[in-house]
Image: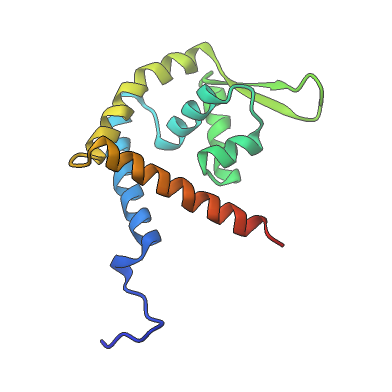
Length: 152
């Protein structure tokens, strides 16, 4: 098939490649976390709350990149398992703040080496400078997209 100036070669499209990489990484991670009975979305929540204790659901949704409805359901399951605690904001009683429970912190500590190993496997063949450059480019892309969505 002949390509014109407005054609898209899927395998060269940046966001197609991101999607493919993320799906493969999540598949590997899902398998690796299975012995802990921990789902990938739950790992993202644990890691985000470890770094941002006391954040709101809105901040958590942005940090985890989990759609709000899916996040709400995952948080409900995690609260049932006593991994996450929800507390009222002391300054704004309408708002809730989320944090890891003791059990959630223990699970995070058990999962962290597994996740770090999966991350290492994903960048095999890349040196530290290449990983740092890739990370910097991803942050630039994120910044560009944030600036475009914030513009009127």
